[in-house]
Image (tube, helix red, strand yellow):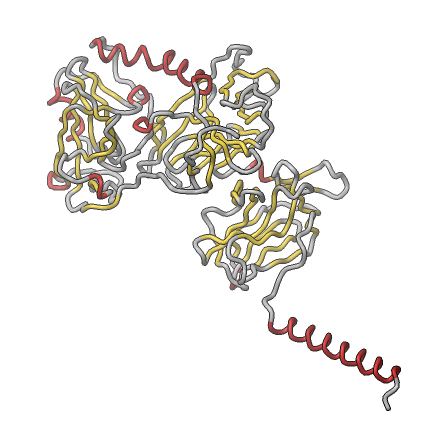
Amino acid sequence: MKTPTNSVTRQSATHFLLLVIFVLYTTFTCPRTEAATQQELLRGFKATPNPSVKSFQALLNDSTGTFSFGFLRVNSKQLAIAVVHVPSSETLWLANPTQLAPWSDHTQLFFNGSLVISGPHTRMFWSTGIQGDRVVLLDSSNLQIQKLDDSASFVWQSFDFPTNTLVENQNFTSNMSLVSSNEVYSLRLGNNFIGLYAAFAEKSKQIYLRHTALEAKADIVEGKGPIYARVDPNGFLGMYQVGNPVGVDLQPFTSYQKNISGFLMVRLEPDGNLKGYYWDGSNWVLVYQAISNTCDLPSPCGSYGLCTSGSGCSCLDNKTDASSGKCFSSSSGGDFCSDDVEKENDFTVLRRNGVDLPFKELMRYEITPSLEQCEGYCKNNCSCWGALYNNGSGFCYIMDYPIQTLLGVGDDSKVGYFKVREGAGKKKMDVGFGLGITVVCVSIGAVAFGSYKMWVRRKGAKRILEEEDGVSPGPYKNLGSASFRSIKMSSNSSRR
């Protein structure tokens, strides 16, 4: 007969044996996982991507758990280092958007005083290139490398290197730029303005929106320092001059002065529009956009496209079906120059009446007495892709970049002359309306665009009136040439 003591002993031994087997099994057969997410990274930290992770692998959290820093899987096989907004899984910052590493156990992130992404054969994809003692993620989403001797002392921060997004209370200075995820559009500061630029050509950037500081409450004093911009939690994009806390410009969002609490960000989208959003706890709500009319975007219908208000997209040749998403491609070269001598058979010519430019007040132009002279100027200039002529005023706008979308207008006195490269073929239009996170679309009222429209009246009205009235502004001008996902709007247009 078995005694109770022997039975208990055998059960304990069995349980212990099962525990050992379970530990061995999980150690050698289960997928490898990283240690629990930390709130600081110290010297000696190392991490490799987990092959079982499908999207984002967190390595470091802020104190509130709202933001995380870690590995972001890109295109299923590549890796970027990112800061994400945890509730929405939205990427706010990327360390290496143009130098993606492979998602493999040969890729490693380590901190040896600098944050470094290395790959096989000791290849380095990205590094902060500065020495510190620890890495922390602040509750503002700012990633910092700090010195341990002074917790307030940082030697590097992600806020100084934005990608396509600015978050609230992040300063945007004149030596920074925002670049859209498709790397076509950028935002920069001038001496008294915010400018949006399009890289349609390799050697130059065309400005397509210029918002000049209104200087209503404070003036920009020459020699007193550069300007900077900042997204204010109270619901506006402000411009300031270094050393003066009073703003020189304010672009209000629809959330301005409405006591709405929610994390704000501004993003340069793949279609070239600058948009503002706030997080209401469950959705990203649209509260600002710099360009309200789709046809005023830099290229809403792609290359050699035509955008007509109320009718949508068509093609300049009036033959190609725009619904197929195809017009002439302009991506096959930067210009028509070959050994500084233009070849007549390099291109064919496409002409179209009733067309206009969406940002002509910022375009380079000449004053010519005839359409023939305007066309001749472009024909004999191998860096010119096209010209647009107003028969009423003599304005001849020069397009020294591959042809993008033109505006369809009812005025046949506005004539376009466009070069089409021989053998360019047909390719899908780069419309630039990508899909991304879901937002609740809030109607953009007049207040959100008050500053922008006032700027248009100040800077653009005189120029446009001169053109329409046929008044020459003087000699040759050159006003425009300077050598993450987009947000999908839901049908719900009101905030809960």
